[in-house]
Length: 117
Image (cartoon, rainbow, N blue to C red; front, side):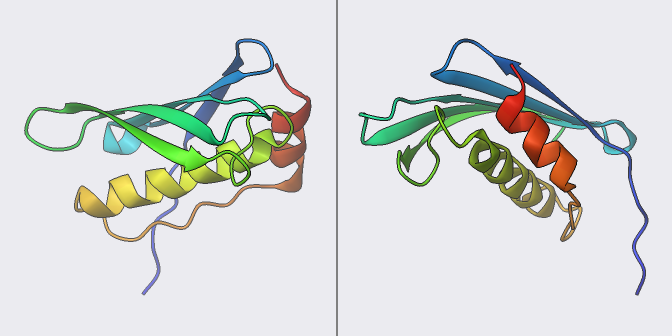
């Protein structure tokens, strides 16, 4: 069974070396995921604060989670933050009844995250 492709936009905002926010908007589904990562290379954990819009009865949900700092190091491997954010987006879509999603990310995007703000 073939699935339709949907356009999306992910914005990146850095606030120094220790904080990164990724915001993805799926206009066709009216779904958004905003993830803010805060961590340091000497910290054992990376903190993630999330806002999901457009899913569920309320339509807005915040949550927080903690990741091992070596798995998602904000300071020197921001691409792992992007990968985590997009994996979380897949979960949000599935939990919201949209089914499984495949998200394609090009090498140039991964490089841009590492060299971006």
